[in-house]
Length: 90
Image (tube, rainbow, N blue to C red):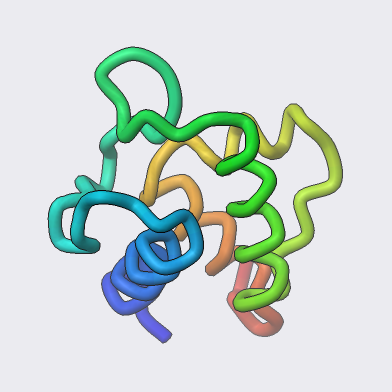
C-alpha cells in the first residue's frame, strides 16, 4: 500500500472511530491532532487511535513517548504504519 492510500485510510478510520465532525478530506496531513490550533482530540481519542492503529495496521505503540511522537498528525502516523509493515525495507 502506498503512502497516500495509507493516509486516506487513516483519515477515514479516524472519522469513523472518533466520530469526528469533519470529513476525512478536511483533515490536513500535517494538521496537529492535539493542542492549540489542532483537530481538538483528547486523551480518550489518543487511546482510541492507538487501538485503531494496532487493529487495522498491526502497529504496536508501547509507551506514552512513542504515542506522542506517532500521534502528532496524519504524516507521523502514516510513517509509523509504513515502517511497521513487514517487508517495508526500513
